[in-house]
Image (tube, rainbow, N blue to C red; front, side, top):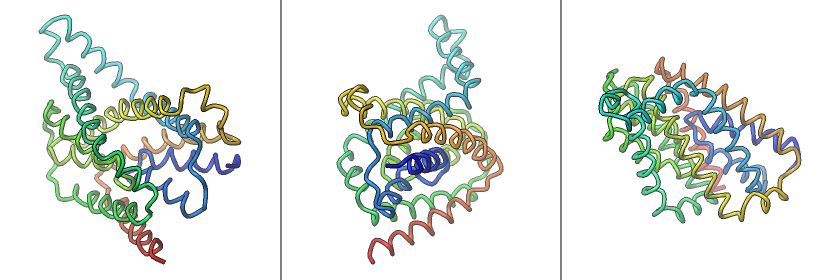
Length: 267
């Protein structure tokens, strides 16, 4: 992989990781269409570090506030009436259910990465999913443990390439009655343990960082910087999209790309 390819993949990773269009689906299609091999595992890890850093920076005030409230909840009952107490447990329970959904389908997910036809079908599903919010009445129900668990299940199904993680969790939150701001915030705070856990699993399976670092592609750090800055910009843009309810263009894009992929895969 050349330095330009590293830069391009980092840029695509940063944008599609957070836009509701499935980063895994886009990267899988790019590799098939351009004849690239899978990126080195170490490079993939670094790109996820970059996008995780973008989330942590973007949501730093929320993480500090809610995390502080959750930890204070262990000191006494009077602190358990604050939003951070429920938020912390909802994130933990949602993450656990994500893992429970992903593990039984791990082999199917790995198979799907090698099949443009399956990725195309999943992109169409994502596109249709993104058309739903326009039919939801705007509500402002509070986040609860139960709603957090359901959103965690939605996130688990998004392990399938072509199914958008951000799209499925935000639409799921809106469908459960959360406000647009709350659905956006919980979706991406829920992504933090998911991204970190995926990185840790890849690191263990790859035999540790020292074993992986020797196989970094040319210009890897260009890709990392591109992923961080494009990811942060994508979060800023997507927040406005969610707040103003303008989902359909992402949905139309995914449906067109999915249909095009189905045709291309059968040529």
